[in-house]
Length: 237
Image 1 (cartoon, one colour):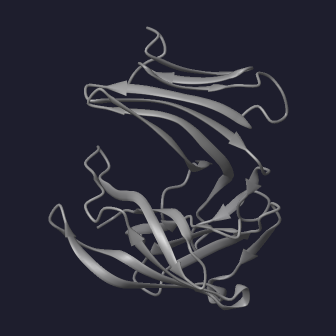
Image 2 (cartoon, rainbow, N blue to C red; image 1 turned 30 degrees about the vertical axis):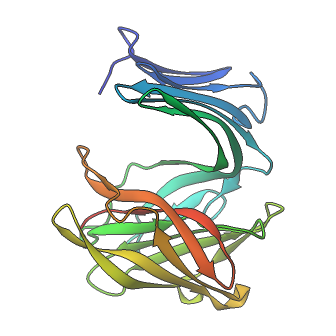
């Protein structure tokens, strides 16, 4: 949407810095093998601004097979890594009122030359942070059959366990009307091998992003065999 040639947007890798207009992410530790282990994020708009500091207390996670994440039985795939271990602190200012905040963050980086398979209409993507420190990355790509599910269990110490489709159960349990779309906003997630049985609840049913590619995304609470927080993204509705 903006161009680097006139300085509106760009990315520098050593040290890492990415920006678009007044929004930017800057590596706090400069150059090194863990160049995004600490990040400073800042942005502002007509009614808000934020200044956040992110520090990762765990390793980068390669999703799929050493970073190669298959998306369909036909072979569509991406390269995909995550940093799910950020602890966050900083200030958010809304309508001139500053609020100190703390929390958790999850960075995803994914790239591919292949779109979805022709029979895939969209996806659901979940990233719950359990209070135990364990985390889960799970997505379902919807098609004319049962859908394509991929998941990765991320332990509190950063060890990962890829989960097959049969090991993860994703079940919609409540729908809501969102911007004219009937959408499943609450879900049940089960991973029997990890004794996980949780329900997700959105902070806001109406978390609709009316961008050039419209979709639902927003924070969630989880409850069940464990509690915690997380994020849900849904497209194609």
